[in-house]
Length: 334
Length: 147
Image (cartoon, rainbow over all chains, first blue to last red):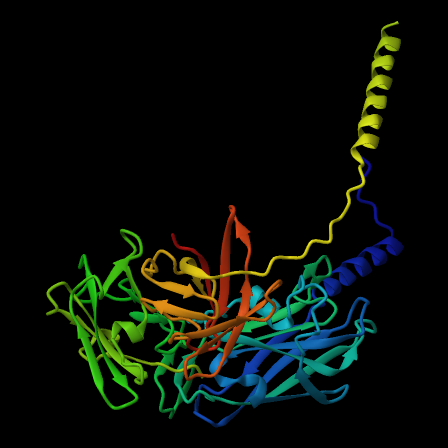
């Protein structure tokens, strides 16, 4: 019987070469191999973070700049408080902020920051108060030549410009200016590493902002003043509380004003009623204008509030972390 | 024969279409009319409100809130977060094609904001964008004249 699989020596070499080339092409994207990041830091300290990257250049194209995205809380004002340099066998240099006018080729008109946010979102953080800060290298590199760049990005960032203690998942992404966050037959041209562990900032005088763990209550917008509309959400799915199964949940709050006064609103009326978003969601919401809710005077500013959630009788109270302590919220923008 | 019959009709139709096309082009005389100055005097109520893109219309009671514009001044009734919190004077940057509205609350500095003035379903609307609290929080109120 004649064999149809009849490969001569010469053809075998060709086939092998093709397979090897195929594998090389399929894995030619930029890769973040690991990140060295401390677990904690104090407010105002400069934290060193190293992002180890592997950038093979099999294929063709370029020259392109290496793009780096850093996912951080907005309150850190990272764009002003961060410096990044890179080191590699082929040379060292610096990375600088990408101006908003420099748009990614494949970002559909979005800025690099917005393109990152659209692609990777908040990186597993539960509060939408994060931003992707985009950087690019001072030099471009070509995708030809088969050189493998082993690059370390050395970040120095001052944490906690907003003076808040927090738990947050930092994120990192790399790509090149030519391809952006795309994949094709030759591979994936980007790499992203979103935090599995929570980075902790301590020593601040502000509220603890926990991006990592689901909270019993959240306030939207996360940064607001007494002259905003704020939406308070009580999430009964986070843990069982004394209010589990309650048909109605009410807000019991105390406002602290700039002139040293306190205003308490603790009643069980339509004014303080949190409505369940859907019949079975166990999420209750109240949107209010703090100035009017607390009836603040024209010259008074509400600086912070403490609050509990109560049932219809007002006797059952749930506080921060399902304890007797109140939830706290500071009205500020930074 | 049948083929010719069809072709005749086709040519007739073609000529008809051609005639219609030609006759449809008529030179219009453009009258250089002047755009009427925008008069926003009256009582306005909120018909739609958003905060950072989230619709607030159904979760906040806007029904009592009114902005009343007179010739040069405005008054707020049943106040809600707005560009200004006190009554005062207002001005449009261009009375014919306004893009900006400036409120000057009595005793305060003037504040300006983006402003559009479309006609929707035959009714004038005022769309005002502003940040009464943190500058990162953007609100849009769409106002319509209250009866």
